[in-house]
Structures are given as C-alpha cells and as structure tokens.
Image (cartoon, rainbow, N blue to C red; front, side):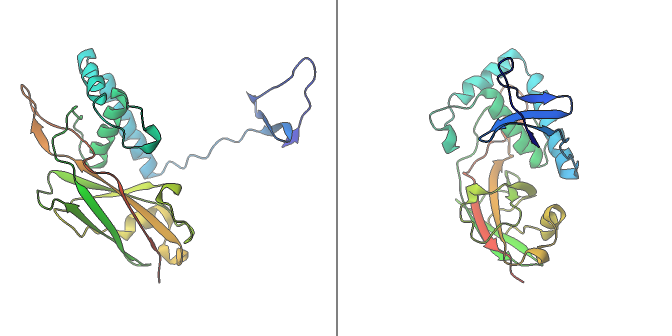
Length: 245
C-alpha cells in the first residue's frame, strides 16, 4: 500500500482503477493492489446460493396480484429484529425469508402469506460440548403436536474465545435440521467438523448455537391446494458451551 497526494486538479480519488484500489483513511489517501476475493465454493456455499436464486426466481414468477397480497400481509407483521423496530418488512423480504426457511427445512414449496400455527416458546440447552459429541436439548411450550408440522433449523458459530458472552456478537452458519416432537435433538458433530475442523483442536473455546422453529405444516388454501407458510413460529433461541476434552 502506498500513500498518494492529490492536487488542485484532482482533489480526491476513490474506487477501483485497473488493478489498483484508491481509498482514504485517517492517514490520508492511499492506493493498493486489487486482490480478488477468495471464493472457496464449499458445498454449503453452493447450496446457499442455489436456495437464494430459487427463492428470488419464485418471487419473480408471482403475479402482480400475488405480490400485492404479500405486501399487504407484510404490513400486518411486526418486525422481530430489534434493529428494525418501528419499520416493517416488505413483501419481497418476507417471501424470501420464508422461502429460504422452507428450503433449509428440505421443502421446495413456495410460501404463502398466512400464519397457521400458534406461536411457541422454545427453550434450548447446549447440554454436551466435547471433542466427540455436540448435543442440544430442545423443549417447546406447549408440548405436543407432530414432527411433520415443524422443523428446527440449527445454526452454530465457529470456535470463539470463552470470554465472549453475547450471542449477537458472533457469526452463525447453518448446520442441520432437526425434527423432534418435544425434546432431545442431537446436533451431529460431523456437521460442525466439516465446517470448522475437529473440536479437538479448540478445547477451551466456546461455541454458540441458534435455533429457528419453522412451520412446515400444509394448510388448505381455499379455493386451491394445500400450501405451506414457512413462517418462523417462535423467536430465535440461543445457547453456548465451552469445548471440553
């Protein structure tokens, strides 16, 4: 990286020019060589991109009437994200969110703009965190119902310092989907190892987990076929544990 000095003709320059990047910080203007970002194209990344592309294509295939239905429905929804307090999601954003929920849960149905299940209270405990086993216990209230109506989408962080306390300060990666009527969902260590490496190399580090409970039940849409809403029917829940030998 080299510093540069601007003059009376060019007072400022920023952005990419050829193979060089021009920018500015507190030390002044500088230029550095452009380095193409690394795209490892892991299986997980390829799947995520394909899911997003399918969700966007599904939205684009909707009629104007259907898009208006989503926009109207989105106006009735309160944002769960505290950063969006006082704002409402668009029909597009809500459709994409629910379409991705369904695809992560293993379904290719397009979501429909309705709520069909009562909201749940989901409790999550990260009971086991060793070099050979990662286990979650999931309990929902009210208890009951069929595993065919809900899926638990599990995300996890990579290893972080044991001193990290806030679950909102880490980056989560999709791990797997659990289908449990009441409790005791195993979080297979294979999924985490494939993404981050063996936990044996991170003893003493902390892992955060996050779970979304998604409605995948099929409800009748009159007149019309049975459809899925893909709604997230509980607030996201978090837990953490420190890897032990």
